[in-house]
Image (cartoon, rainbow, N blue to C red; front, side, top):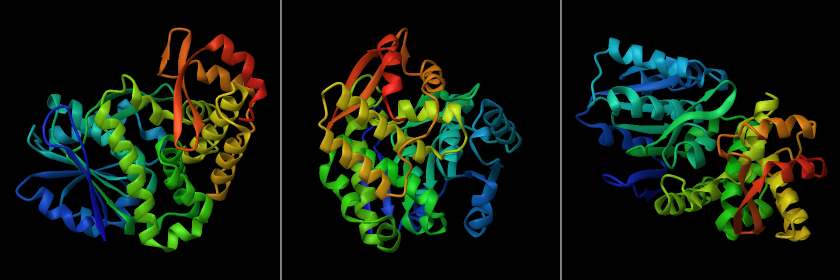
Length: 346
């Protein structure tokens, strides 16, 4: 049970996303190469038998470790290992590990080859696909980073068996997002099936993960550096990053779920989405076991929104659903948004 999806790159061969029974591809993909694995302590403990045969660097866990200081530590260890520009850096872990591995690989010696083994559902459908690599700065998400796609991403669905229901649900948020953006049938899976169905049925999970990756691959292939259409992949994320800046109570996927419901609410207020469609979005998010509101004061959230890295002077690009399977990008002034914020159930 395996599916391969290719993501085109401006230079070189396409990035290959292998979904399903993917770990058995690792040896062939790295044959004849010197590999250094970057992972965190939790993933290393669970998958020591896979990681230990390789040279490896272990970083701390959690968003507080996704920093320039951690990248600097990776550089120090790579220098100590005498790693060069032909050394292959392999990020084995969730989104934090893959983000920082891609960033370190893209900047060490001006670039070294890299790939990922995505160990969480969230990383498999979002963080490890599409070439955005970065670290947080001063508490703001992904403020320093690069666009550079991995050679390959291994999305072995068996790795998701070790996730808690909460972590698994967080990954589902990004799949729901892809459905809202461009695939109504994919979205419909989360109206027909409960979280437990995706956990117990690997064929259903493969369909969901592959569907999300196809949506992202198609958009990235048309707009690799996020100059236009790729902004659609930020659906729910502008509000999500504000939530994450304001509180540490939510996982990233949970914040994205809240952000999607908020974006739908805003779209209804602006007349570009009907209320039944917004209700479907809220219901699908809740059906996946995700929160639909943060309970955070609107003024605090607005202050965090103003520091979003995607802002352009006094404006920001918001992604709004216009239907299930369609969305639009709207440039919005912060002054207008400030007046609307109290009306939104963020």
